[in-house]
Amino acid sequence: MNADGLLELSLSEWLGQGFGLAALAFCIAGFANKNDDRLMVLLIAANVAFALMFAFFQSWTAAALTVLVILRIMLARRFPGSVKVLTLMLSVNLVVAIVTWQTLTDVFPLTAAVLGTVGMFMLRGIPLRIVLGFAALAWMLNNLVIGSVGGTLAEAMVLVTNIITIIRLYRLPKKYPDFQPDR
Image (cartoon, rainbow, N blue to C red; front, side, top):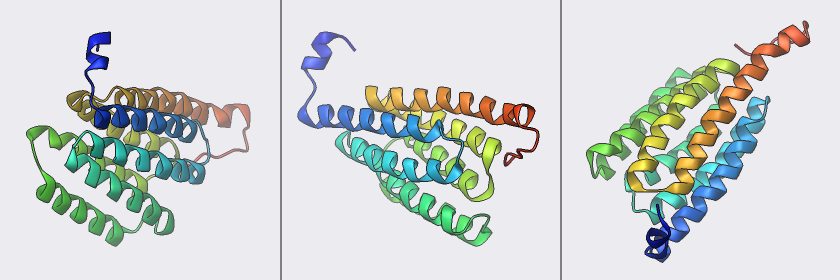
């Protein structure tokens, strides 16, 4: 986007960009953590900012699914590994996506929501971060489509930070032989 394009943004688009940048900060802090519980808490804060960003960009499927991401994170912390709660969340995601669907590109937030839901309920440690990395890629594609610079940067940073954290977690047993990461 060039300088002329920035000057032509509406107030809603400026606010969307700002919330995307706020989400970026929370995502970096979360994925830089080796602690899964802290990751989840910081992801809740990031997703509040993302939901507001999507609302300001009028990307309603993404906004609605992001609100569900917040609920999913809380439920996944309380009911880890629960197939019943996982199935319920996947079903609610599908219904919400159908009700709010606007364009073919809404497949990106739905894909991200499904990957994130499966990852958060069923995985920990390195596998969790790999699946969340693929979810971030789907969110990034959505952000590119809607024109969110902040959101695109946030998801790109999530991918990079996630890869770095996966490498750090993988190396821990070599540096500290008694440490057993959740793989």
